[in-house]
Length: 331
Image (cartoon, rainbow, N blue to C red; front, side):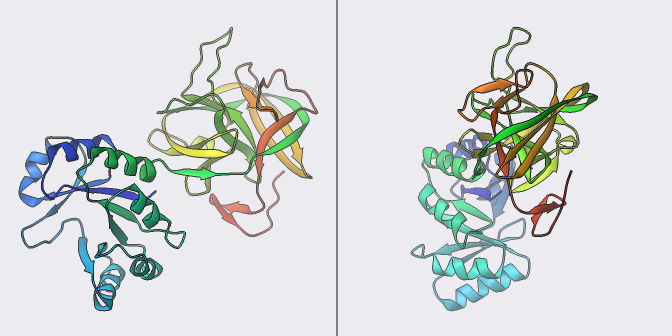
């Protein structure tokens, strides 16, 4: 995830408190104001002294010519976190610097500039430094930077098998966000074929809704996390991020508040899409719902062979959660 820094060099308390509430990574303040600033909230501060020197291995380089660009590149390669300030906010110097180092941050004035900076060369800057007095602009940039999103292509797969497996250990993922109807997680016995499991947003005769929860399934299964990576469900714990998706494949990162592993009766669901297999081991309970091809929800206890359900397929295999171009067979 990109880093978000708000500049409060003139020490505006309203800017600082809004930045803290917006979940920034750092706030840039005058060195002599550090003790006072610490009383406003728990956040990391970068201090700047009267000579313009920054703490935490950061440096600022103003790009006015090719020599300045070369200086910034040299500092970044040496391990410095280089905050680049361009006189007319041109993209070319940033492209050149990003191509040479990952330690590049860009000064921006608004969300539009921030969006451009994080998308340059597809890789983008490591973070942005927002210079503004507009508290709404801070919130807009925070939404852009801190709420990581991705888009995946969901498929309509036909259920080919439903098999009772007996008892097993399953993971219920309680997030720190309220999930909406139509949102859930992608899980699978293989990362190449995952099934969409809906969040517990629906009321049931047996239990109240838990709109922050996805009863995701067996401990061994894969699920997706930010950056296009996967982890095993049993690896999720408080403070880690996991991706949730809506039925159109729009994903967002949320934080795990608690992961509950309990022994429950399980069942295996297998499906097929264009000759590719999708499968998941899920808890055998009425409250576990999948999403049908038409967007409606169906409990796993009502699922039948031939039903269409939403899922996800990919070509590459995985090695330590990273996509790799090699032949991997998982059965």
